[in-house]
Length: 454
Image 1 (cartoon, rainbow, N blue to C red):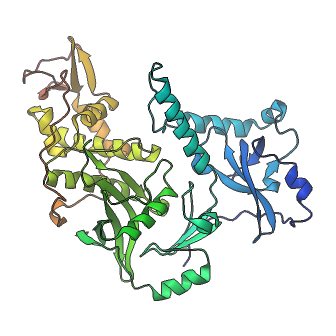
Image 2 (cartoon, rainbow, N blue to C red):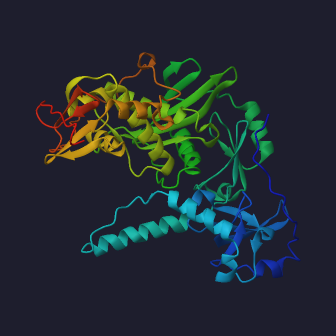
Image 3 (tube, rainbow, N blue to C red):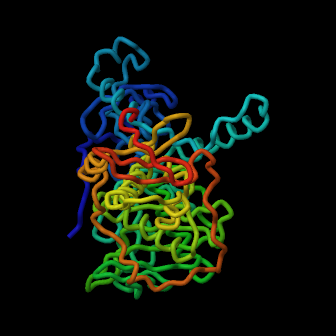
């Protein structure tokens, strides 16, 4: 059974009689465009092409203030051509503009570069040039959909598939060996002949139907390159596609009688001087919101525990990545705090969770548990606050969790323990139960009743 996305009925234009209509739409200009949800938004036309299969001209558009994953190819009949730059016309689509505003307010800053000081103008210009080059290269997404197993998946971003493969409207990808093909008949023949039924490498985790394989590009380079090309279709800022030897890849699969079906993966550097335990992480779109993402996050921290280090994901995270990590970190800390009484150094929390001190402190701060009192930063929560967070859907126990006893793995290379970051203002936390208040104070283990100051 094939799972397909909704189709849009298009008006057909011949390549000969549509010249005048096609010429009326200018690349680089803005028009009101109907999105897939039938809402109208202002969009910039980036590119045009003639769809030989459907016999119509289509245009690649970027919707103003919306994430690039919504960029798409649209036919002529979804674009209002007249008065494209008129403000009066834009005002007539209040619903569309309202929709844009709400989307814009929810967007997170995903720029991979920090703003540099004004005195470093040369460096800032270099960063700007790289950003512009990245935007220029990736702004046109030719591959609209991929066939991956039984799923037909809408793509989100450009991916540098080589030659004519990157210019196909639809690409066919084997879910086992990740070989990519242009034609359906080639794909069907390949699937009848492909002997792969699981990722290469070593299976290091098996719990029920869930399986995780560790793949070393030194032994399976082509597979890892193809995995990176596939991932780029759903990750905006990803730059490593072919030089993959410095990473290890961890492939999460759901196993049935037909084979091991990929649900997601993460990669990590074999040696990370910055303490990153994840370089790139992805759950494929059909399997998102099913617990696989947090399972991958949890697994990365279980590996860090086996290595005896603390780790953090490489930044920047995508908007979805930020939400997943924040939710996972919150659940881990709340699960400890709900039953813990006594004093514990921050370094001990790091060892318990393999989270960095910064991630621990920032997560508690985001949950409104970091306070300023008597000249010091303290972590101060009430039992009711902990309970309310635990009951919140945002911080509930992940649907899928890692069974550490089911991991069969040893580190790539023995490493020394990584110390926690030096945060002088909070060296340790102390937990004490008082009437209606759970207090975690900085200092050498001394707790105070802060009921009147909380």
